[in-house]
Length: 448
Image 1: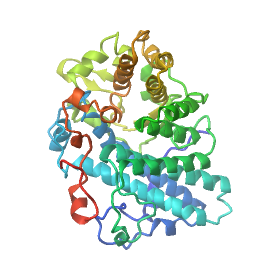
Image 2: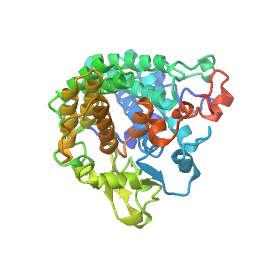
Image 3: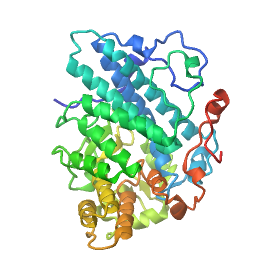
Image 4: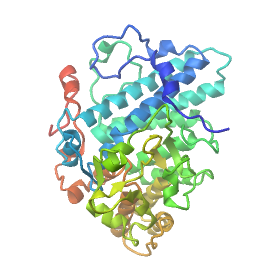
């Protein structure tokens, strides 16, 4: 049976009953036509709609905002449009009211609030059509989605306010102070442990909803960010050893229709009724796009060098001043997936973890899996620093237009060296100004 696609239509059915807004205080009344999430989940149908609504929240910030934050802020992508909010990101001069950072921040909290509602509401459902197995599956998905939400907040904004209950009365949030980044990541870990316990074993055809391997993959990434090399390697290995995942032979295959390739550990599906128009920011006006996000000249030179980019040159098209990215390429129909986790990332997570643990042979072996697929000669030597640099370079090319590069530079403290952003205060995005004004318990990140 084909994997269910998460569509806006399904999400809309439940959105009428969701509390509009997140755990942020930019609303001052509870809408008359909304019910608290936990109250709205009453049977099998509303439980299923609730979790699809939560996935829709993840789609909302991964369809443009979050991948933009992970790309234009770094060196592979530059500003090529007219809107100041993108120029601010490109120049790493981000005001506290930048439209994209504010939108991403709030959308993440909305998704978290939806997950909180599912976690609170599902245990009380007593419907024979909702089996214990399906209950566990939905709960596991909600814990996973909350985990990725707090992970994305943590790596973007640092330690944040942690809210684990659905927001029913906005006044109840007063007194919630920001946690440290360590505490935020502790919550991510706790949710992933719970998600892995509840989620079903991997189904061979499911790649756009969370399963056990999805939780393990995010746990590998979390441990990489926390520099827990042994744990990162162990969880990456569990996912790599899962037979359903393998690198596609041709790099371009994973981002061309019909999608959901063997490479995807988790991608979010879109449809004609639930569109992902992110391609529009990448394509030139001659192809109907805005051409706001443009591959940098340095990146284009590397990706077109057969000894460096190999087959990954398929990420770009055009020539001269009109070279553009084609990872998101369904112009007109707008059904590109949002790529959250690919098996290629797990190989590079394990490679980096092994290199930092002193296992250089193992690190090179994993790195060379990615290089070989791209048609690039394997790395055969090098000390620890050289191997780590080779892994970083490979990450930069392999995930050039996905939400990786900026966060890889900040977590490895290479932002100053590569981008000239030497002040670590600016390695985090600002908390939205409106949130600072409305909530005395929210402290702004230093430097803003």
